[in-house]
Length: 273
Image (cartoon, rainbow, N blue to C red; front, side, top):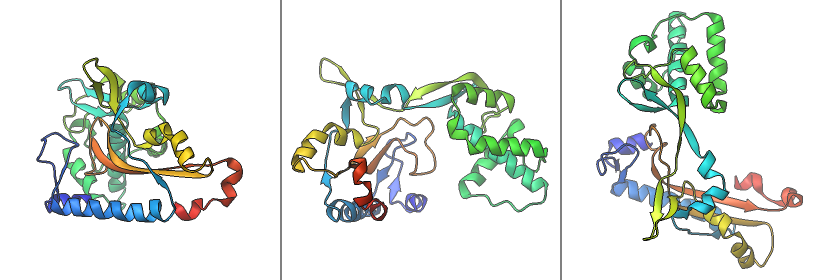
């Protein structure tokens, strides 16, 4: 649906000229407003949740305490020749999936390829262009196992995969500089003339956590307590892709449900979720 809106002018990326940012035209604004209204009516109003609206700028100390400063990161793979920056786990995933598709084609099996995958397939160059190349059964098994746990690899593991399986930049065919390194996904900013360190919030949950005591007071010191936030967040994605699914500034709606474990059987978690 996002790609359809983009192609029809409801959402455009001409405003900034930088990947990961979109301007919403009249159709896109109308759709967004309707989604927000429906979400708020279904969750906040029907379930009597406490809505919170917090600033986008969050002090360093808050995100340091939450672990975001150290752990809200992705691994980066850098082209050794032209300096292109790609997200390491995504490029490993892309190349191995392409090789498995080539293996199926070589075996005469039917291969269903999504629209984005077709575009990527045409871009593969050098040794990564493996269309129609049959793989050993053991290699197919190994690739499948890697893809099943791709989100669990750390920097060392991703570097080993890139080296062992000759993973290269899909658009250039160049090798990557190793080891891969981390990039924090938060936008760093400073507050005031004193330049107090801060970040654009990567999600809206922090505002709900910071205001928990006030929300509890508003809820007459009773539990369970459900809070909700709708607002903009920012994530400095390494390589924005998939249309509107992975961008650098986006509107999000989050719910935080606070309750004691003993209350779990009495809360309508299944119906609400």
